[in-house]
Amino acid sequence: MTSTTLRPPAVQPPASRPGIRHRAEKLWTASPLTWFGLVLGVILSLFPFYWMIVIASRTSDAANSWPPPFLPGGKLGENIQRVLDNGDANIVKGLLNSFLVSGTITVATVFFGSLAGFAFAKLRFRGKNALLLIILASMMIPIQLGVLPLYILMAKLEWLNTMPSVTVPFLIGGFGIFMMRQYAEQAVPNELIEAARVDGCSTWRVYWHVVVPALRPAAAVLGLLTFMEQWNQFFWPFVVLADPANPTVQISLRSLNTAYFADNSQIFAGTLIATLPLFIVFVLFGRQIIGGIMEGAVKS
Amino acid sequence: MSSLKTPAPPGASDRRSRPAPRHSPARRRQLNRLDLRFTPYVFVLPFFVLFAIFGVYPIVYTFWIAMTDRSPMNATISFVGLDNFVELFTNDPQFWNAVVNTFGMFALSTIPQLIIALLLANALNRRIRGQMFFRLAIAMPIITSTAVVALIFSMIYAREFGLMNWLLDLVGVGPIDWRANRFASWFAIATMVDWRWVGYNALIYLAAMQSINKDVYEAAALDGASQRRQFWSITIPQLRPTIIFTLIISTIGGLQLFTEPLMFTSGSGALSGGTEGQFQTITMYLLDVMNQRFRWGYAGAVALVLFLLIASVSFINYLLARRISSDK
Image (tube, rainbow over all chains, first blue to last red; front, side, top):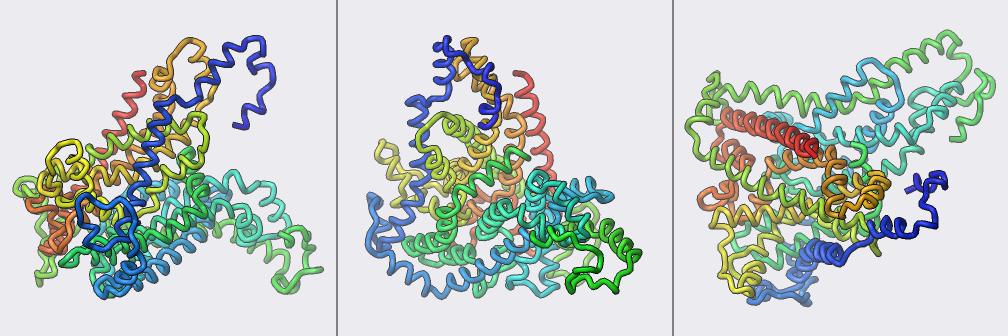
C-alpha cells in the first residue's frame, strides 16, 4: 500500500487517459458474484456458532425434534447449570486446568521465544544456522511419531493424569522462536544494541531494556495464537489424561459425549462454555490475530 | 530504557549492580567476552533441552521399540527385528483399511479446502465495503477446537433429527445414515475439517495476494486479459510458494486426522471408527494398538510408517505444486 505513495508521480497514469485508469480501477471492484460468494462464506462460517447457541438454549426434547429448531429458546442458564453440575464431565475442573496449562505455556513461549528469537536475529554465534535448521525440522515432525515413548516417559515421571504432562513438553516450540526471530530482525535496530553495548550492557540487559520493549507487539500476537492453540489441544491430553477426574476442558467435552445417553442440549452448552473464553479473546483481539496469521504467512 | 541513556562512566556513578572495586577493567573485559560468546547459547538452550527430552529421545526410542515385542503384558522384551513391519505390510488388513480411510478423507477435505480458500481470498482481495468484517467472520471458525467442531457437526449429521438430513428432505432426497456408509462418513468428516480451516488458509492466501505488485495486473488488464485469465496467469503462479506451504501444512494435519472421526461417534468404542472401521484413521488405529491391545512394539512400527507416509506425501505435493505452476 505504502509503495504507491512513494512512487514518483510520473509513473501514475496521466489524467488525459481516463479510460485506462477506469479499467485499472475496475479490476479491483467486486462483481455481484464475488459478493454472493463472500456472503455465502460468512453465513456458512457463522452458522454453526449460531446453531450452538440455539441448541444450548433449548430443552433436550426440543433439540431432538423435527424439523430441527432454528431459534434460540430460554433454557440456556439451566443447561449451563446442568453441565457444570455434571459429575462425569468435571467441566469446572477442566476449565481451571485449561486456563492453568494454556496460561503457563503462553507465558513460557513468549519469554523463551523472544530470548531465542533475539539470539537468532541479532547475536553472532557458532552453529547458528544449523541450530535454526533443527528448529525448522522439529516443526515438521508429528507428535504421533514419538507418542508411545513419550507416554512411557510420562508414566516413569509419574506425570500421567497430571497437568505437567500436557504443559512441560510444550513450554517452547519452533513456531514461537521463528515468529520472534522474523519480527526481531526488523523491529530491533542494530544501532540501539550497539549503543547499549558501548554503554556496558550485558547481553541480558540488552535483551531486557532494548529487545523486550521492541518485541511487545509480536509478543502479544504470539501470546494470543499460543493460548488459542493450547486451549484447543485434544490429541495429547486424550492420551495422557485418561482419568476423567482431572481433565482439560476439551477432554471434559469428550466425557459429555461418551455418556450412555447423549444429551445434546447439555453437550452444546458444554461446547459453548469451552468456546466462550476464545470467543472473548477473538472479539477483543480479532484484528491482531488475523494480522498475526497474515504476517506469519508472508514471511514463511 | 532510561538506564541506557546514562553513559555509565566506570565506577563513578554506578548503582549497586556494578560496584566499581569488584571488577578490575581486565576482569570486566573477560566477563564481557564470556558474555558475548556464551550468552546466545543460553538464550536458545530452553528449546533444545525440551526438544532433546520430549522430541528427539522419544523418536529414537520409537525406532528401537518398533523392533521389539514390548508390551506392558510381556514380562520380558525380546528383539524381533523387522517382524512388526513384515506383519504390518503383509498381514494387517485393518491397518490398510485405516490408510485408505485416512487418504480418502485427506483428499476429500484438502482439495476443496484449498480451492475454496483461494476463491475466498481472491474475493477478499477486491475493493469491498466492510473488509474487516468479512475477514473476521471468515476467520472465526479457527477459535473453535476440533472437539467442538466435531460435536457440532455430529449433530448436524445425525441420522435422526439431523440438520443435514432435514435439508436433504427439503430437496426430496431420502435421509442418509452418515455413520454407516463409508463415503458418507468421509464426506461428513471432510466438511468438519474444511469448516475449521478454509478461513485460515484464505487469510494466508490473501496475505500473499496483497504482496503481489499491482502493476502486473494493470499491465495485463491493458493487454485485455480477463479477470479469470489474470487469476490463472498471474495470481496462481505468484502464489506458488504459499500454495506449497499450505499443501504441506494440510498434509501434515490431514494425515494425522484423529479428533473429528473420534468424536463422530459417542460411546467407548470410538477408536475403532464406526461399526466396520469405515472411518478409522491411522492415528486412531495407532492408539487402538497401543492402548486397547497393548502391542507397544507394533504401535511403534505403525507410528514410523505413518511418519514415512506424511513425509513422502509432503514431498510429492511439493513436486506437484512446483510443476503445476512452472508450466504456466
